[in-house]
Length: 636
Image: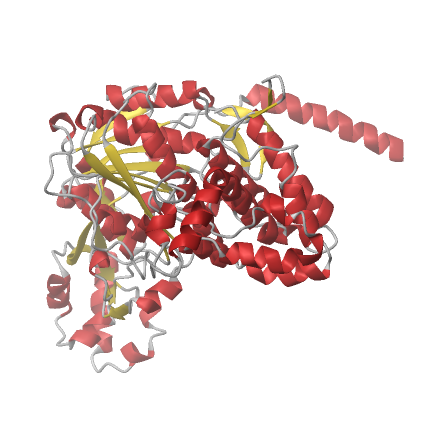
């Protein structure tokens, strides 16, 4: 997308903020005025061609029909699904500066309910007192009506038919929205990445999720979902990718967009963007996906998301009654019975939400693309372990793509795209594809950093990664592995406690036969024995002990005495060769056995860097010695 034209509009809007709001608001609060005004101006110009028709219909039927919404937004009105029945436009408001406040409120109150919902989420009316007291409300409206910028879809022409200002497409308006959000968040030292995924990452995700099934989606009806939809970029870009008449798929199918967003302002922008692009805004829901799923009754064909990672979801946990009963964590929500992650990071819970919305009764099934940080691949949190295990053992995981660092606006950490499907083709069953797209052949450096974003992908880079994914052939940057290659059996190795540690244990010192036990342990230190299990060891002690007393003698620290054994490796053989020679008198606690999965990219794509030669190191040391000698001579 050529963003040069859009950048001039963004610069103009930013100048309005800088010129008029500087002494009234701190920069981080400019957004409270500028974002809703940008949306209002865009809607205002879209409604201008049908303005009189809406007013005429409103005046004719306002006393005859109770609910005029469908009429005024339909063929008897704007035909856009939204309207404004006020006699004012933003331009005509400027004709009466003295009554600007009351007229502007009349104008805002005359919008259709869906537009008023957007305005209310911005809490824009709360700003009117401030703007009026500062005597700049009129100036703000006047500047947004400036002929220097075009908010209309249609180009502005001069008297000779030459284009003065290009029209602003719906896609372009979406870019303007999101770039403004990023700039304002950056000024406020907030995380722009919470609301905005870089366009090239979205484009890569659309290639990975749609191209493998492009022949199945040429026609028909399909539902696309984003459970942390932000300003809606993933949804609108997805639809544009599959339906683009010059694109790689050129589908003629109907695609319906659904999403949910918790941030009220971002929700408002998303809803406005959908409205402008002719989408049904009632498919975008406001609220927390994790504790208040507003689309619980629906299943989806395609799901794309960039959920928040490393962020607490403690409030949601309380709302769904997360509680720990023994070693098991439970909650009231059926979506999350597979596993519940710690309250400090809820990213994998968004993945579970999408799994619960997969279609299992269609030929296509469902395909998911979700962005996560590294912890989702290997974190030992019990909830994340359970979720990974469920996904891999259900054979849902198709691929994981490691992205270059510094691709996002709010973080420079490694990030990964998960591709999940419940309809793997036959040659992919039981396997997972890993793509390492972290080297410089897959990105270019930005001339100027945008927040933490220092790198970007071009179309060429996206094509390279897509080709790796579609070709499904192992090479230096791509591996196809069995599901079991990521699995491990986790066991605890038990052994007798040392005599030294027992000497400081008051409970042990109170045992009646402690002297006999100590003698037995001394004999073991001198002559180690082979024990099959705990029972075998306790038989050797030859002292009758209760379960709690027996526990005093056994070192079963699950932190220090745990082994992760590859799933394809025999546990007993591993213990005999890798543990027993170094931990005498030990045994396997078979009751502790559990299976988990982790995906360690460094293990599979490790690049050996040879150490510096001794000659090189010695040369540097000699050079430093000379420098030090010269400095000492200067001092002395």
